[in-house]
Every structure is written in structure tokens, then in C-alpha cells.
Image (tube, rainbow, N blue to C red):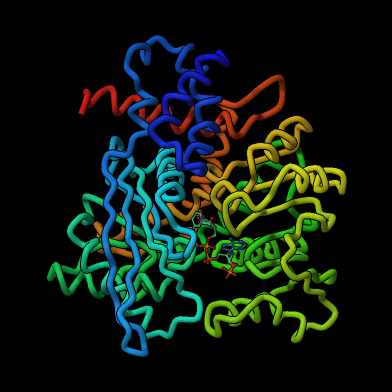
Length: 446
Ligand code: NDP
């Protein structure tokens, strides 16, 4: 079996040798899905995984825009349309200087499995640009978003490809891109999700990824007769996912003691309660400030420059910033300090070596494709509401989100149970794979 996996990986590697993040995601899926394929006759001779790792289409384009000094700037835009077997492409747009094809292909590949797990009819895609929104004026952001959409609009649509937000793309950016799409296409349609409430957005969409990550942790803990209540929680990041993960932890009576950004982390032993969290939300979302400013406002807290928060003792860790932000050494420290549960809010934040450590110690570990699927699930609900031209209440959407997260959890158990312990990674990969692979088989070689 190991040989089958290695042969497959080396073939994919030849074609994608300069894409380390993409190869990391492919390897992680192959290790659990190839043994499953081998055990199931219907997939034999269909080259199904080989077809799934090749994007259906990759779009790459120039994005020109004019900065506030009147200078012309050039960035690169992308959209990876990975798989449309079970629905139109769906996945976020990321604006960050690190964006490249490897990162977007890894995200698009993960998205295929994640979207399948939600049980909603959505294929997988991802896109973005190496544009850095940090330090840009509102006018510069608007001109960039308009220029980006001036090219992207040709390839997307409510039945084709429906992008959403990701790192560096929040409500403001979605608004500017939606405005430009509407102008170019002359139609008001649900082509993006994460829209404002008064123009087609869904209640709970901003909260969904963070809330869902904590619901998933709660589901894992409930399964072993435990709960989030009363636990100490370490969170990385201070953006959309981290903020609402922290909010949900507070609502479930857990104590959140860290948040971070790319310059370091803050540790508040007293807990980042509702009042302190609303300061963080205003600081990050309106003032576009740095997390280090927290300690000026709350001097009992400490700021650790250029450090990640994993050495702080906790019961639950929620990595909610970016890929490969938690390594094997961090994993060992977390476990030695008593951590019992890790739920990934970000995409692929734990390195393969860190996951190995969690698995070896039989720690509850949820991969992002399962635990952070709440965001895209509510995006799917936003699409449904747009089609119905109707809005569900906050409670209705939140209940649907809870149900979806529980369904995903249960699918992971169905396919990931190993000698009384749940391998959530294996469960998520196999459950996500089955639906997409079966649809591909039914649709023929296209
Ligand atoms: P935001 O842009 O709102 O926030 C990102 C946060 O992560 C910021 O605090 C940022 O710090 C930090 N960060 C980004 N890059 C790095 C880095 N290289 N090193 C350290 N910190 C970093 O993004 P989101 O909260 O939306 O996304 C966070 C993660 O969650 C991503 O992996 C994303 O793919 C994933 N995700 C998001 C979903 C959503 O609905 N938004 C859905 C599913 C997954 P700084 O401000 O300094 O850059």
C-alpha cells in the first residue's frame, strides 16, 4: 500500500515539482484515500484520484491599478477551478503577498473535499492575488478590486463559479468586487458570497467559520463525554475566523487567553472576554491596527513579538491564522502542557509532522476541511437564500450551521473509526472523496 501511495505521489510530483503546499495537501489526502480506493472495486481502473488532483481549469491574469500617488502598479490574479462534479466551483479569494499557484491549488484541492463534506451541492475552487492590502488606502483597495473583477467577471457566475472571502478579503472587498461585477454584467445576482446584509448577504456568514470551528471542537469533545465549557483556549490569528471562534468560546463559557497576527501574539491570563474582544474587532476591522496594541489598552496582558502562541498551556488549541503555522515541536509542547483537542480554523495550519504527533498521542484533532467547513456551508446557505429571494433568521441559519457541523463530525466517525479512536483526517478525506468520485464516475470521462 505504501508503494502505491509513493508511486502516485512521485508521478504527481513530476508535474508539480515547484508546488510544495499543493504536494503537501495531495500527499495528506492520498495516504488515506488510496487504501480506500484499493478496497473498493468500483474505483478500480478509473484513475479517479489522478483526475481529482488536476484542476479543471486555471486562470491567471494581469491586474493593473493606479495607487494614490498616480503610479501604475501590477499584480497577478488567479482563479483555480478545481472540480465541478457536484456543483458550481465555490471557494474564497485570498489577497496576500505570499499568494502563488501552489498555495491556491492546495486551497482549491482542500476545498473540493470540504464542500463535499457540507452535503451542499458545491464544487471546489480558490483564487486571489499577490496584492498586499496592508497599508493601502480605501481608494486603492477599491481600484484594485475593480481591476481584479474586470478580468475575473468573464469566468464566474451564479451557476458557474461563486467566489467568497479569505485572508485579506472581507466584507469591504466583496462589496467593491460585487459592485464592479454588477456594472459589467448588468445583473444583480448571487455571484459572490459574504455580501452585506442589505444586498443579498446571509446572517451568520461572517461568524460561520469561527463558530463552526468551535462547534466541531464541541462535537469531538462531546463524543468523548467532555465539552468546551470551562476550558482554556489558545487561538492564533485575529482576523475573521479567530475573532468569531473567540466569540463562540466565550458564549460556551470557555476562556480564550491568546490571539495573534503576523507580528506576534498577546497572552491575557484573565481571558479575552466580550468587552476585550469587541476592542480587538474594532482594532482589526475598522482601525486596521496590530494586535500588539492590545497590551496598551489592557496592560495586564503581554505581547510576544514574532512568536506563535503554542507554548502557552491550554486545553484546546484553535489555529486560525494561516497554513503551516504549527509544527511538530509546537505539537509536542501543546501535548506536554495538557492540550486535549485541536480544531483547525485555518486551512492546513498544522504541518504533517505536527499531525503525526497528534495522531501518535491519540489527541482529538480535526483537519480544517472538516472543522472550518462552516464558512462555506453558510455561503451555500447564502446562495440558497439568493435563489429563493428570501432571508432566513439568525437562529435558522445558526441551527442549520450546527446541524451541518454535526453531520460532518458524524461522517468523519463513519469513515475514520480506528480501534475506538476517531481518525478525523481519514474520515474527512474518505467521506469527502466518495461523493465527488461517484459523481465523476456517473458523468463519464469529461
Ligand atoms: P483574515 O485576513 O481575516 O485574518 C488572517 C489572520 O491571520 C490575521 O490575524 C493575520 O495577521 C494572520 N496571518 C495571515 N498570514 C499570516 C502569516 N503568514 N503568519 C502569521 N499570521 C498570519 O483571514 P481569515 O480569518 O478569513 O482566514 C484565516 C484562515 O482561515 C486562512 O487559512 C483561511 O484560508 C481560513 N479560512 C477562512 C474562511 C473564512 O470564511 N474567512 C473559511 C475557511 C477557512 P496579519 O493581519 O498580521 O496579516
